Length: 284
Image 1 (cartoon, rainbow, N blue to C red):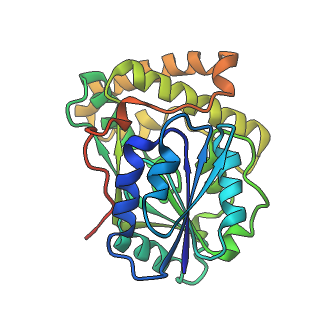
Image 2: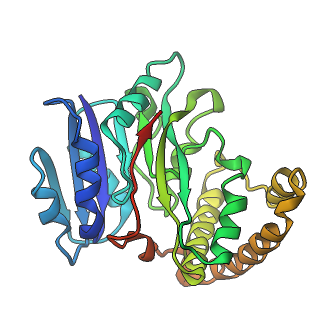
Protein backbone atom coordinates (compact mmCIF):
# COMPACT_ATOMS: atom_id res chain seq x y z
CA UNK A 1 0.00 0.00 0.00
CA UNK A 2 1.09 3.55 -0.76
CA UNK A 3 -0.10 6.42 1.43
CA UNK A 4 -0.97 9.73 -0.21
CA UNK A 5 -1.21 12.83 2.02
CA UNK A 6 -2.99 15.90 0.62
CA UNK A 7 -3.06 19.18 2.54
CA UNK A 8 -6.07 21.14 1.30
CA UNK A 9 -7.10 24.69 2.16
CA UNK A 10 -10.25 25.86 0.34
CA UNK A 11 -9.63 23.52 -2.58
CA UNK A 12 -13.21 22.49 -3.34
CA UNK A 13 -12.91 23.72 -6.94
CA UNK A 14 -10.03 21.39 -7.84
CA UNK A 15 -9.78 18.63 -5.23
CA UNK A 16 -12.39 16.36 -6.82
CA UNK A 17 -10.47 16.34 -10.09
CA UNK A 18 -7.22 15.57 -8.25
CA UNK A 19 -8.75 12.62 -6.39
CA UNK A 20 -10.46 11.20 -9.47
CA UNK A 21 -7.21 11.38 -11.44
CA UNK A 22 -5.27 9.74 -8.63
CA UNK A 23 -7.68 6.86 -8.06
CA UNK A 24 -8.99 6.20 -11.56
CA UNK A 25 -6.74 3.19 -12.19
CA UNK A 26 -5.96 2.11 -8.62
CA UNK A 27 -6.50 -1.44 -7.51
CA UNK A 28 -8.54 -2.05 -4.32
CA UNK A 29 -6.36 -1.30 -1.30
CA UNK A 30 -3.46 0.01 -3.40
CA UNK A 31 -3.63 3.57 -2.06
CA UNK A 32 -4.40 5.01 1.35
CA UNK A 33 -5.47 8.62 0.72
CA UNK A 34 -5.58 11.13 3.59
CA UNK A 35 -6.97 14.59 2.87
CA UNK A 36 -6.38 17.19 5.57
CA UNK A 37 -8.82 20.08 5.15
CA UNK A 38 -7.30 22.94 7.13
CA UNK A 39 -9.01 26.24 7.90
CA UNK A 40 -11.52 25.70 5.11
CA UNK A 41 -14.54 27.91 4.59
CA UNK A 42 -15.77 26.07 1.50
CA UNK A 43 -16.78 22.48 0.75
CA UNK A 44 -13.30 20.97 0.58
CA UNK A 45 -14.00 18.34 3.24
CA UNK A 46 -17.34 17.41 1.66
CA UNK A 47 -15.71 16.98 -1.74
CA UNK A 48 -13.13 14.64 -0.23
CA UNK A 49 -15.77 12.66 1.67
CA UNK A 50 -17.62 12.17 -1.60
CA UNK A 51 -14.79 10.00 -2.91
CA UNK A 52 -14.99 6.43 -1.56
CA UNK A 53 -12.09 5.27 0.54
CA UNK A 54 -10.63 8.70 1.27
CA UNK A 55 -9.86 9.53 4.91
CA UNK A 56 -10.73 13.13 5.74
CA UNK A 57 -9.32 15.14 8.64
CA UNK A 58 -10.44 18.68 9.46
CA UNK A 59 -8.26 21.23 11.23
CA UNK A 60 -9.69 24.57 12.36
CA UNK A 61 -6.57 26.58 11.50
CA UNK A 62 -5.11 27.06 8.04
CA UNK A 63 -1.48 26.06 7.61
CA UNK A 64 0.27 23.55 5.37
CA UNK A 65 2.93 22.33 7.85
CA UNK A 66 0.27 21.51 10.44
CA UNK A 67 -1.83 19.77 7.82
CA UNK A 68 1.12 17.69 6.59
CA UNK A 69 1.98 16.67 10.14
CA UNK A 70 -1.63 15.68 10.84
CA UNK A 71 -1.76 13.70 7.62
CA UNK A 72 1.50 11.96 8.49
CA UNK A 73 0.12 10.99 11.89
CA UNK A 74 -2.96 9.44 10.28
CA UNK A 75 -1.21 7.69 7.39
CA UNK A 76 -0.06 4.14 8.02
CA UNK A 77 1.84 3.00 4.93
CA UNK A 78 5.02 3.55 2.94
CA UNK A 79 6.03 4.66 0.41
CA UNK A 80 4.37 8.02 1.12
CA UNK A 81 3.36 10.63 -1.44
CA UNK A 82 2.87 14.28 -0.52
CA UNK A 83 0.56 15.68 -3.18
CA UNK A 84 -0.67 19.25 -3.62
CA UNK A 85 -4.46 19.48 -3.83
CA UNK A 86 -4.41 21.17 -7.24
CA UNK A 87 -1.95 18.79 -8.91
CA UNK A 88 -3.24 15.80 -10.82
CA UNK A 89 -1.09 12.69 -10.56
CA UNK A 90 -2.42 9.61 -12.33
CA UNK A 91 -2.33 6.11 -10.83
CA UNK A 92 0.40 5.09 -13.27
CA UNK A 93 2.43 8.12 -12.23
CA UNK A 94 2.28 7.13 -8.56
CA UNK A 95 3.41 3.62 -9.46
CA UNK A 96 6.38 5.00 -11.40
CA UNK A 97 7.43 7.17 -8.44
CA UNK A 98 7.12 4.19 -6.09
CA UNK A 99 9.19 2.04 -8.47
CA UNK A 100 11.95 4.67 -8.43
CA UNK A 101 12.20 4.27 -4.66
CA UNK A 102 13.10 0.61 -5.19
CA UNK A 103 16.36 1.65 -6.88
CA UNK A 104 19.40 1.17 -4.63
CA UNK A 105 20.09 4.24 -2.53
CA UNK A 106 17.08 6.24 -3.73
CA UNK A 107 15.05 7.66 -0.82
CA UNK A 108 12.99 10.37 -2.54
CA UNK A 109 11.44 10.77 -5.98
CA UNK A 110 9.54 13.46 -7.84
CA UNK A 111 8.02 13.73 -11.30
CA UNK A 112 9.12 16.03 -14.05
CA UNK A 113 7.09 19.19 -14.56
CA UNK A 114 5.27 20.78 -17.46
CA UNK A 115 4.44 24.46 -17.17
CA UNK A 116 1.04 25.45 -18.53
CA UNK A 117 1.36 29.00 -19.87
CA UNK A 118 -1.60 28.81 -22.25
CA UNK A 119 -3.32 32.18 -22.56
CA UNK A 120 -0.97 33.87 -20.08
CA UNK A 121 0.24 37.45 -20.63
CA UNK A 122 3.61 38.13 -22.19
CA UNK A 123 5.46 38.82 -18.94
CA UNK A 124 4.26 35.56 -17.38
CA UNK A 125 5.28 33.58 -20.45
CA UNK A 126 8.65 35.33 -20.53
CA UNK A 127 9.31 34.53 -16.87
CA UNK A 128 8.55 30.84 -17.36
CA UNK A 129 10.58 30.66 -20.57
CA UNK A 130 13.57 31.14 -18.25
CA UNK A 131 12.21 29.31 -15.20
CA UNK A 132 11.37 26.24 -17.25
CA UNK A 133 15.03 25.91 -18.27
CA UNK A 134 16.57 26.81 -14.91
CA UNK A 135 19.10 24.18 -13.77
CA UNK A 136 17.96 24.47 -10.14
CA UNK A 137 14.99 22.26 -11.05
CA UNK A 138 17.10 19.37 -12.36
CA UNK A 139 16.76 16.34 -10.10
CA UNK A 140 15.02 18.52 -7.52
CA UNK A 141 11.99 17.73 -5.38
CA UNK A 142 10.45 21.21 -5.42
CA UNK A 143 8.20 22.85 -7.99
CA UNK A 144 6.27 19.71 -8.94
CA UNK A 145 3.53 19.48 -6.34
CA UNK A 146 4.26 15.79 -5.73
CA UNK A 147 7.04 14.16 -3.70
CA UNK A 148 7.45 10.47 -2.87
CA UNK A 149 9.46 9.25 0.13
CA UNK A 150 10.43 5.77 1.23
CA UNK A 151 10.19 4.83 4.90
CA UNK A 152 13.93 5.45 5.25
CA UNK A 153 13.55 8.81 3.52
CA UNK A 154 10.76 9.89 5.85
CA UNK A 155 12.93 8.90 8.81
CA UNK A 156 15.36 11.67 7.87
CA UNK A 157 13.30 14.22 9.78
CA UNK A 158 10.83 14.34 12.65
CA UNK A 159 8.04 16.78 11.79
CA UNK A 160 7.50 19.29 9.03
CA UNK A 161 8.79 22.62 10.36
CA UNK A 162 6.63 25.72 10.41
CA UNK A 163 7.94 27.11 7.13
CA UNK A 164 6.33 28.04 3.83
CA UNK A 165 8.87 26.19 1.66
CA UNK A 166 8.00 22.61 2.60
CA UNK A 167 9.19 21.17 -0.72
CA UNK A 168 12.56 22.94 -0.47
CA UNK A 169 12.84 21.60 3.09
CA UNK A 170 12.33 18.06 1.81
CA UNK A 171 14.80 18.60 -1.02
CA UNK A 172 17.46 19.59 1.51
CA UNK A 173 17.18 16.29 3.38
CA UNK A 174 18.75 14.27 0.59
CA UNK A 175 21.91 14.19 -1.47
CA UNK A 176 21.78 14.26 -5.27
CA UNK A 177 22.33 10.49 -5.38
CA UNK A 178 19.43 9.88 -2.98
CA UNK A 179 16.91 11.78 -5.14
CA UNK A 180 15.42 10.75 -8.44
CA UNK A 181 13.52 12.83 -10.99
CA UNK A 182 11.23 10.40 -12.80
CA UNK A 183 11.10 11.91 -16.27
CA UNK A 184 8.53 9.39 -17.51
CA UNK A 185 6.03 11.12 -15.21
CA UNK A 186 5.08 14.79 -15.47
CA UNK A 187 2.78 16.94 -13.42
CA UNK A 188 1.26 19.92 -15.19
CA UNK A 189 1.80 23.05 -13.12
CA UNK A 190 -0.66 25.82 -13.89
CA UNK A 191 1.12 29.19 -13.99
CA UNK A 192 -0.49 32.42 -12.76
CA UNK A 193 -2.97 34.00 -15.15
CA UNK A 194 -1.96 37.60 -14.42
CA UNK A 195 1.40 39.28 -13.89
CA UNK A 196 0.23 40.61 -10.52
CA UNK A 197 -0.58 37.04 -9.44
CA UNK A 198 2.88 35.93 -10.54
CA UNK A 199 4.54 38.68 -8.51
CA UNK A 200 2.58 37.73 -5.41
CA UNK A 201 3.56 34.10 -5.87
CA UNK A 202 7.22 34.95 -6.39
CA UNK A 203 7.27 37.16 -3.32
CA UNK A 204 5.88 34.38 -1.13
CA UNK A 205 8.26 31.78 -2.55
CA UNK A 206 11.31 34.00 -2.17
CA UNK A 207 10.36 34.94 1.41
CA UNK A 208 9.73 31.32 2.34
CA UNK A 209 12.99 30.13 0.80
CA UNK A 210 14.98 32.88 2.52
CA UNK A 211 13.47 32.03 5.91
CA UNK A 212 14.27 28.35 5.46
CA UNK A 213 17.84 29.01 4.33
CA UNK A 214 18.43 31.21 7.36
CA UNK A 215 17.30 28.41 9.66
CA UNK A 216 18.80 25.38 7.90
CA UNK A 217 22.30 25.32 6.43
CA UNK A 218 21.50 22.07 4.56
CA UNK A 219 19.33 23.96 2.09
CA UNK A 220 21.01 24.53 -1.25
CA UNK A 221 22.10 28.18 -1.66
CA UNK A 222 20.46 30.33 -4.28
CA UNK A 223 22.53 31.11 -7.39
CA UNK A 224 21.24 34.54 -8.30
CA UNK A 225 23.02 34.69 -11.67
CA UNK A 226 22.19 31.18 -12.85
CA UNK A 227 19.32 32.42 -15.03
CA UNK A 228 21.87 34.46 -17.00
CA UNK A 229 24.93 32.19 -16.97
CA UNK A 230 23.18 28.85 -17.43
CA UNK A 231 20.04 29.79 -19.36
CA UNK A 232 20.38 33.01 -21.35
CA UNK A 233 24.05 33.09 -22.35
CA UNK A 234 23.90 29.64 -24.00
CA UNK A 235 20.64 30.71 -25.70
CA UNK A 236 21.00 34.36 -26.74
CA UNK A 237 17.55 34.42 -28.31
CA UNK A 238 16.15 34.28 -24.76
CA UNK A 239 17.68 37.64 -23.83
CA UNK A 240 14.35 39.59 -24.01
CA UNK A 241 12.72 36.97 -21.78
CA UNK A 242 15.73 37.15 -19.48
CA UNK A 243 15.32 40.89 -19.06
CA UNK A 244 11.68 40.34 -18.07
CA UNK A 245 12.72 37.53 -15.70
CA UNK A 246 15.32 39.73 -14.01
CA UNK A 247 12.90 42.61 -13.57
CA UNK A 248 10.16 40.42 -12.10
CA UNK A 249 12.67 38.76 -9.79
CA UNK A 250 13.84 42.13 -8.46
CA UNK A 251 10.26 43.19 -7.79
CA UNK A 252 9.60 39.89 -6.01
CA UNK A 253 12.72 40.39 -3.88
CA UNK A 254 11.38 43.74 -2.72
CA UNK A 255 8.04 42.13 -1.86
CA UNK A 256 9.75 39.33 0.04
CA UNK A 257 11.37 41.82 2.40
CA UNK A 258 8.00 43.02 3.66
CA UNK A 259 7.27 41.56 7.11
CA UNK A 260 3.79 40.39 6.12
CA UNK A 261 5.11 38.29 3.26
CA UNK A 262 7.58 36.35 5.38
CA UNK A 263 4.92 34.47 7.35
CA UNK A 264 2.21 34.34 4.72
CA UNK A 265 1.05 30.93 3.54
CA UNK A 266 -0.81 31.87 0.41
CA UNK A 267 -1.39 30.56 -3.07
CA UNK A 268 -2.28 31.74 -6.53
CA UNK A 269 -6.05 31.69 -6.84
CA UNK A 270 -6.04 32.39 -10.58
CA UNK A 271 -4.44 29.02 -11.39
CA UNK A 272 -7.01 27.18 -9.27
CA UNK A 273 -10.05 28.14 -11.31
CA UNK A 274 -12.01 25.06 -12.40
CA UNK A 275 -11.38 26.10 -16.04
CA UNK A 276 -7.63 26.66 -15.52
CA UNK A 277 -6.85 23.70 -17.73
CA UNK A 278 -6.01 20.06 -17.19
CA UNK A 279 -3.53 19.18 -14.48
CA UNK A 280 -2.80 15.52 -14.99
CA UNK A 281 0.13 13.27 -14.22
CA UNK A 282 1.13 11.39 -17.35
CA UNK A 283 3.54 8.62 -18.17
CA UNK A 284 5.22 8.08 -21.48
